[in-house]
Amino acid sequence: MNYTLENEYLQLRFRSIGGEITSIQSKDGLEYLWQGDPAYWSGQAPVLFPICGSLRNNTASIGNKGTCHMPRHGIARKREFQLDSITSNSITFSLHSDDISKESYPYDFLLRITYTLDKNSVTTSYHIQNDSGTPMPFFIGGHPAFHCPLSPKESFEDYVIEFEHEENASCPSPDMATGLIDSSIRTRYLENERILPLKHDLFYRDSLVFDELKSRQVRLKSLKSEHGIELAFPDFDYFVLWSSYNDGPFVALEPWTGLSTCSDEDDIFEHKRGVRILNSQEEATLQYKITAF
Image (cartoon, rainbow, N blue to C red; front, side):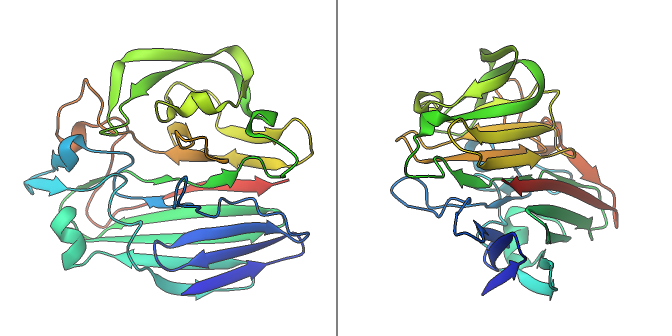
């Protein structure tokens, strides 16, 4: 099912498959969110749970429950979510564990996602609840992608990523074939600076994984117009920047709590960087905010 929220600034669209947002459009018709052209990438803004990125061979040992098997970015993004509620300015979807989810991730859980519209911003709230009798390790992340350029009169290279603080940051090397990360090889992208100019060749070897940032806010900003996107992600440890290797006219701004399995890690789920663990009946809430301008 598809749903809509709107106010005097924005119209938002959502779908129950994946519980995801599918459109962020200004009232004058400017579409900010990538619309999923399969020539480049058919996705839009999938929810990553209970992993972000990939496991080695899609497999890991987990708790005292043996082995889990999951594709890249986990099990939530292609599942049908239940609509819990919709108001004039918010919508909430939920996904409950079932026999299908337990084949991959052997826990009883509730994942609830609330989108709240406020003026020209939308806040995404992830609420995770452990309904199992044992501790539950998990990761969660967002993967929203945005048109870049936003105007047909601009090019990809007319845009920059502006960081909240001056950064001196390098990124480990992802493997396009496996989605894993070689933590022994790093490339420096920022040297005491806030601005990263966008170029397609940044993504010819997959994503930029920022694991050393001070900033918890970034902007996708045009150098030729007043338009762009601001992403604030105070609850997330990592920021991933990605576009398709075939010069896709979009860029994804991704807040993650963890990463793909790294070269210096074993295959025990709880040993992965950034893992969060909920005790039985414990809950966690994480938020990020997208502001369109």
